[in-house]
Every structure is written in structure tokens, then in C-alpha cells.
Image 1 (cartoon, rainbow, N blue to C red):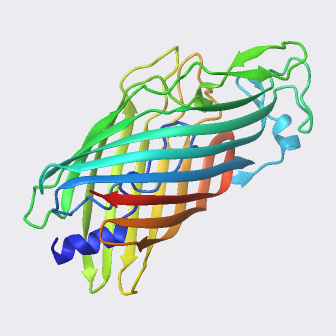
Image 2 (tube, helix red, strand yellow):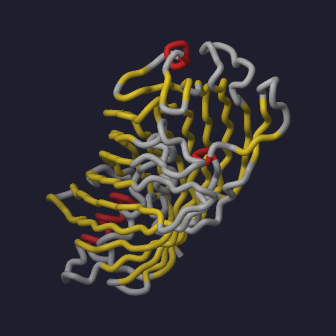
Length: 333
């Protein structure tokens, strides 16, 4: 491995399979970069990444401001009274496999398992308790999510500093799971809101571009843009298109660990279709994501990252997290 490839690997070693959000909800999922370790590197072979993400959406927000449940219950949208949500807690476990065929070509596969708990007070709530006829429910699901397969080409220059990404998000996750109604007028099981299902039911096209290089001794940078758009709809639902932008820096001057930081920006269009939430999906989020990678030996490393909100502008009323935490282990075969 040459000096530049080693520098980029230290910069991003643990991030070879971090998942981007597969949901049109603006605040669902983690938007850390998934590609730093392999972009610009010329070594071949297989790399594995196992990562856990924790995301607790427990703050109601409308536009750029927070809103209380009581105030949310008094809002009216095009469908009637606003639904009041209590929380959505997400635990993601993602296995990433990344294979470099040669210095120019590679492919990554990401397999997420999602454990999610959700509670809503429905549309007849006073902001504290649910009311009859409000459609409120509680749910807990644990299931495989949507698998992502992303190829890359970085043979445009001798230093492999720039490249393109292309792939698909596949409809492997279920979009028909149910919850338990807490509405006294409609007991029993109910289908989850489509934005809460582990899968969208759609096949999505992924297209991106990147540039990764050194700024000077011990300092490197990374830039990436990724567009995601659904190629079809499923069950009268189509997730909104999204754009993810990432800029990052790392410092490799310390012995035994490499601090890193990213700025992650995400723009999501609202969902569409008769079974979509037309009023409370979509928005723009910007996060600061500091972290550290600790090499264990020449083949493996561990890492810890957190995402902290810098700017949040959501459409309608949505639950957002105070932070997102990620920890993982990476191994090169």
C-alpha cells in the first residue's frame, strides 16, 4: 500500500459500510459516509465492517423549530388534525462487505438489520393522551432492511483520487409489518406507516461522485455527493428522492488513533402515493459528525462516531433525534 492509500485508510478505516438512510423521512437513519476507506485506495481484496447505530427520535419539530405535543395536536393539515407522535427508537446492525477487484473497480454490499420501537398518540390527541378515533398505535419490529449494492470506478487518473458510484437499493425489507392499535374504537392489529417499515418496497437507483486526497502532511480530505431515487412504487407508496452531501477531514499525526470529522447534509423530498404521509415527510438536515478510529493491528480497527445536528428544517411535524451514535469493527482479509 502506498503512502496515499495508507493515509486514506487511516482517515476512514472503519467506515467502509456505514449505511445511508433508506427512508424518505428526513430524520430517519444515519447519513455518515459509507465509502471513505476504499475511495482512492489501490489495494485489492475483501473488507468486512460490522457496525451498530443508535438513533432515538424523541423531539417533535416543525420547520426549523421545536414544537410541543400540545401545540402539535392543535395543528391542522390537508388531511385533518395533525398526528401526535411520541417516539421512534432505532437500533441498526449493519454488515458491510467491500471487494476491490483491482485499483479501478470495486463493489460494496450492505445488509442492515433494524430493531425499531414506535408510539403515536394519533390525530385525536390533546398532546398528552390519545383520543377515540385517532388511529394511535404502538409497534416493535426487528427485521432485515433494504440491501444496498454499490459499485465504484476510480480509474480516471493515475492517483485514483476521483471516482463515481452507482448501484441499487433492493426491496429486501418487509413493507407489510403491523403494530397494535391503542385506539379504543379500533382494537387489533394495524399496518405500520410506510415510513416506519424496515423496507420501502421499492427498488432505488443510487448515483454518486467523490474526490479524496491529501491536503498536506497527516491531513486528508474527502468529498462525496450521492443521489437516491425510487424506480417504482409499491402498494401506492413511493419514497421521496434524496441527495446526500458529505465533506470530511482526518488527522493522522497521533500514534494509535486517528480523529476524524464530517459535515453531512441531507435533502429529502416528501413521500408520494395514497399510502404515504404527504404532509410530514421530507426536509433538510445538516450534521456535524466527529469520531475516532483506533487500529488494532494491520488488518483490523474499531471506531466510534456521533452525529450532532447543526441545522434541521423538516416538512410538517416530525420526530428528530438529539444525536446519533455509531460504533463498529472492521477487518481486512
